Image (cartoon, rainbow, N blue to C red; front, side, top):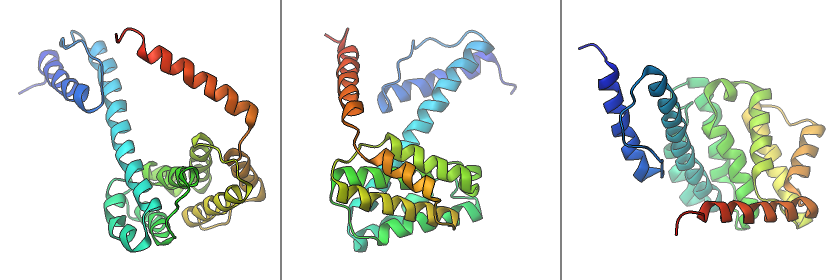
Length: 215
């Protein structure tokens, strides 16, 4: 049976309906009426599903980072299976090495340190195979992820986390990061009081906007 706008629109609406529960996706509940509308709505669905998978993988990585090695090692294969690289031999080996190294390391008990290290590992796990296989691209993915994680005020913890991220980059690329990359990671991890103050104010505004119209 040939595909029609009507049949594809009905399938898309069914998927959107599931995502309203799984991801809070807002949808009209009405079938798309044109190919253009189908394409636009499917793009949103694809992005939402990707976010769900990434969130699942990120949570799994966080569990590995914060759990003792004896427990974390049991989860390594499950985490690797969540990666887009799972079925790409060379890329999956890289992901496996990164996750295994995180699992073998002592559990990270500092919340902010754990968040940064988890972000670095998750960047490798959730990256597409082409990124994983490209040393420059995967290094950028890791450093960008670290920059989005909570900053750390304590200098000793900052140094520890910087070293941990450098080790992740080395495991992912086979080469120790350059001094400039390590410095960029250290800067991203450390607290900037002025930026943190702006971030807090922005979070307040975002929270206020998110609650508008709910009452």
